[in-house]
Length: 306
Image (cartoon, rainbow, N blue to C red; front, side, top):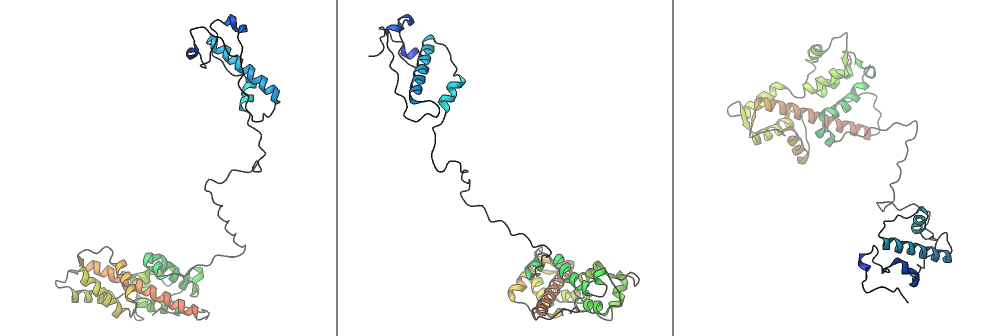
């Protein structure tokens, strides 16, 4: 069996490369052998109807290819061809796996109502990386403990406030009244910002800083950077009565002299002395507060940091 064609075969010229009779009028003399039907189950038609449908579709395609006409599939044909095979897999209906391939992170526990987060302790690293912020936290907490501090204003006659300033700065008891009156008035009282300003402005005695520089400098104008580093360490240990580990001192000096060149002027020296004084004082005060809280005693007042 098979198609009967003439000597000249036009298979390669047809649309689907199928052998076709040279004369369409002789089609009834030829026979058509339908291809085998796929063995997968069809969702809507019976097996017999599917075979007939495939045969009709193939015959229509062959006829249109012979005539050289373009064709489009009908909606029913598209639905028939595109229908997927039925699936009985137990995975049917489950969502696709996550692209990451892992499980989602656990949800963060919700905060209990009525509780406030506790402020973590200020560490030495915090002081070196954010000196002003650490001063605001530690010294600001001390200011709130003075009489009237929680309301934002402390009287200039407050003994606790005056003692704290003298203990944690270079201001002496003989000079505190004069220094207080330079920045605030007795009627206004001491504010938190003014309190912080005094502690930041007078960490070391300026006169002694100048004298120490003149003792190190050969010309009285500058000194080498390595001499400045050694001089700052000696000045801080002598004038601030500080005793840290060698590693801690290296971190302090690196922080203070981050912008130093080959030579250091007197103005730079004075700025370095003030910075190292602030760092050492707030470090020392943080140590005292940590020891006081670790001993289990309650703070009814504010202890000095010297």
